[in-house]
Length: 393
Image (tube, rainbow, N blue to C red; front, side):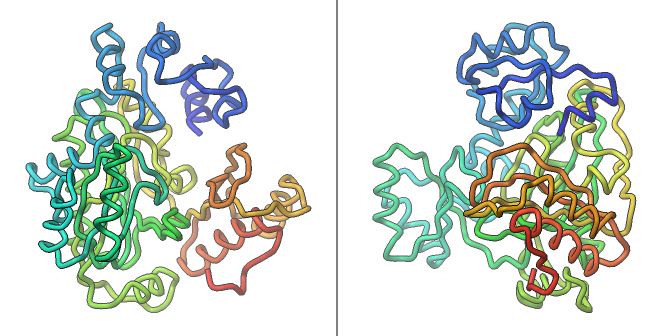
């Protein structure tokens, strides 16, 4: 999704891909094939580039440092990227900065896990320090499950940390862009809805969020970007908790039911130093998309406006199902276009697998209930070739 933005700005992209059928390789003409774990392949891809950036956080830190030492312009720098790669280091750094985080601990033994469980009265979320995506690498063990699970994971050489499981009301994200010279801009705070550990929907601006918490969330995002020296787009995923009403009521108000501004607090969940799924709404709902802004930022160009284009934008992910319907995808796209001309469909050219993000739908509007209904119905049809207007989305 970076390629259209690059073409509009006359920026040439070169891609390092593991295979020619990868989704980005289908639209970027200049492709180097290879493994990002191979330093020589990385240097081949970076040769002659004005900047080298990433679409994930898994490039080995030692390779990134070696690229810097070889005078390649790597954005973000490894000193910042480290905190998106290692969740424990991120928690420790943010805690030192005074940013809100849940209680946490390094877990190097069963005794560590037992002590932390006592501290948080059994509310334990266990995480792999590195890796993990869409619910992978995260466990919520019962008291009986905790110690055997920790033993198993440590025996498999999985570096672990634990954090206190908070009583979520909803999940928020703050997207910030920062360029090397220091300019910073943030988009409106976004609310996301997770299903089975995978982002299903995002609403921007986040509905029924108090002005005070909106400002606090934005300041946390800007603080993290500035203090860590992040360049490019940074997504700060936030837990919202402590509301006067339960999570079901929060989602109901986001769906368009009469809502109220609720009393909430926030804590940082994770960081992503790249364009993020919860920012895909910016493609059609903002003056400057996160993809264009990332390019501007890593090249140290002036940042674009982050003003929204409508009162509400809803992004609904197109998540692969167990079986593909008989109707072809082009036929499904045509049907969505005919029924919902206001819906913007973005497909990734990926193989269809259950739960896999194969695209998303953006809809801008005035009313969140109607906008959400259209986006969800369109996304549902793209997966199942059936309309889901009357289902509980």
